[in-house]
Every structure is written in structure tokens, then in C-alpha cells.
Length: 367
Ligand code: GTP
Image 1 (cartoon, rainbow, N blue to C red):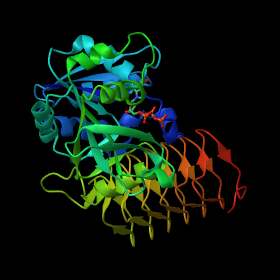
Image 2: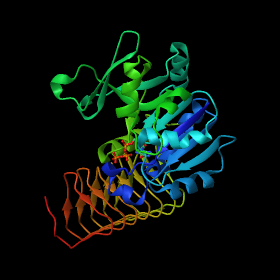
Image 3: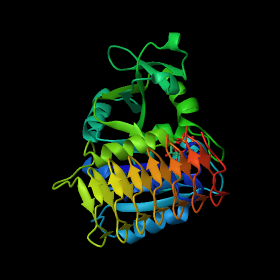
Image 4: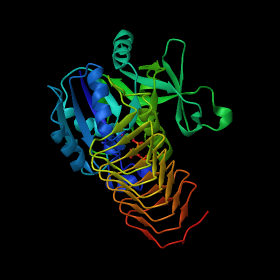
């Protein structure tokens, strides 16, 4: 069976990171997200995938080309000129698909679910489509899916108010579709599978659900991306044989009195100066530098990020090549875009987002 991976979206909720890096390539434990997606599909017995691309397609294609270890797993690219939406993106990929059912996957979903079980259930019901569901703690931010006792989908409730919450099952972004579903998608315009196609299938009683209790998270927001990073570093998902909580590249330059606290991942060519503390579910991309006495905890530093002496980064995401000046504090899910500069003594907090290339003068922001 083949899969279509939807990776054409703008990833607006994960800006400013996605101005430079498509959501499909943001790293978790220093491995691009697409790597987890491909592992998931191959582990589920899928033989090849069509990547449904739109926004920033080139780095995604380059990643696949450079990987070169897909052992017979075929990858095709369907690139749209303008956004076609989640169903339009599937339709655009159809020319690469053989006849028969296809798995469709949102390219921002990290899950340990058993894909084979979902496919088996799909075959056993004879439905035109099977949608996988997962339970979440706070379903009000999602579209709820109500199912009958026999797992037929009964109703969709978009972004419910608290008194409309009748279930905590939400769309997990993994589907099995029969070719007839692709024929239902009108060509050449933006179409949403969630809003246009699934409700029509539900009305025809042709939509079934598979509920998975396995790990599931989408990485669509800074909060969920950081949480997924923490989970992967902790080995909660995607951990293969010989998983190492101290994943520190041997090229790392570590001065005296440095504390490296697992779980942690440090990529090639990083420098950690005397007295610094790095770890507690942090990942440092290639060529990052952490200055004397600085602290990096629970955070993601992308390639080439610099944290100068005495600065503190906690629970935040720092874009590629960004620089945090001496004694600055970056905390509380702050997100810094690529190459921005936080002058010394600034305090960033409460989910603040700084656009790529912005320079904050010393001591100009405080909370
Ligand atoms: P936000 O802008 O933050 O909502 O992110 P997004 O653009 O990724 O949208 P969303 O999270 O709703 O998309 C779910 C999945 O579908 C993601 O993997 C997207 O890459 C993908 N997707 C969304 N819109 C399109 C589209 O127009 N074309 C294609 N090919 N994929 C899309």
C-alpha cells in the first residue's frame, strides 16, 4: 500500500520558525520531523509515499534525496502551485497512486499508533474511508468526532465550547481512503478533507473510525512542538534500540565545570563553555555555542544558535543562527526566529515571538 503525506501547509501557527524551515523538517532530537514520518509509514508496512508539497518544497525534497537509505521505499513529489487544501493536496497526488486503498497522513503528526490495525479495521468494515481518532485532555482546541457503538462516525463538532464536549476523541490526522473518495474531491480548487469530504462520507454512512490509545501529538504550535521534543528526548516515542539519553556528539567542545543534564541531544560541532548548564530535555542543533555560566534547559536550539555568557534559556525555541546576548533571559515558550539578536539584559517571556532577523537593543524588553 502507498501513502500520501500532506506537507504543503504554511505552518502559520509555528511561525516564526516556519518562515525558514517547513514544519515537516523541524527537528526533534536533532532528526528532521519527516524522518519520524517515514519511519512510521515503513514500520506500518507501507511501500512508498507521495509527498503532497506546496510551501517550501525544495528543502523537503533535498532531505529525502540526501537520506538515501530508504531501501526500496519509493518517494514521489506532487508540488502544487497554490494551496489546494488537505483534500486538494491528496487529489493532486493521485496521478502517482496505484489502484486500491491509500493511507493519508498529516505531515505534522507524531504517533506510535499501529497503522496495520487501522488498515485491518478499514478492510473489515468495507467503509469508503477510515479516520483514526485519539483522545486528548482538552478537546476544545480540536474538531471532535462522535462515533456510534459500531465505530461509524456520527457527528463532527468543530472547536466546541466546553458545554458541547461530548467526547474527547479528535481526528488524529491518519486516514485510509478508497479510490472512490479521491474521485469525490473536485479538482483544481482548494478543498478541505475535514470540512468538505468527511461530512459527506458521514452523511452517506461510509465513514468509520479507528481509535488509537498510542502516543499521539501534532507539532503544529510552539507548545506542542516543544512538548513533542521533550517526549522524544525522554524516549516516549520513536526510541529505537540502544536509545541514549545523553546523545552528545563526540565533536562537542566541553569546558570545565559544565553540567550536562539528561535527557539531552547535542549535534555536531557545538561548544559549551565553563560553568554552563545544558540539558533537562534540551536539544542543540549543529554548531551551537553556549557561553560561560549560561543555562539552557528544556529548550530547542536550532543550528548555529548562540547563547552568550550568563544568559538563560528555559522552555523556549531558538531559531537557526539566533543570538542571545549576555545575561539575557528567554523563557516561558518564547520563540525566536532565524538570525534574530536579543541584546544583553533583555527578558523575553509569555510566549513572545520574535521575527527572523529582528535585533532587540540591549535591555529593551522586560517582563
Ligand atoms: P497552520 O497554518 O499553522 O494551521 O499549519 P498548516 O498549514 O500545516 O495547516 P494544518 O496544520 O491544518 O495542516 C495539516 C496538514 O496538512 C499539515 O501537514 C500541512 O502541511 C498539510 N496541509 C495544509 N494545507 C495544505 C495544502 O494546501 N496543501 C497540501 N499539500 N498540504 C496542506
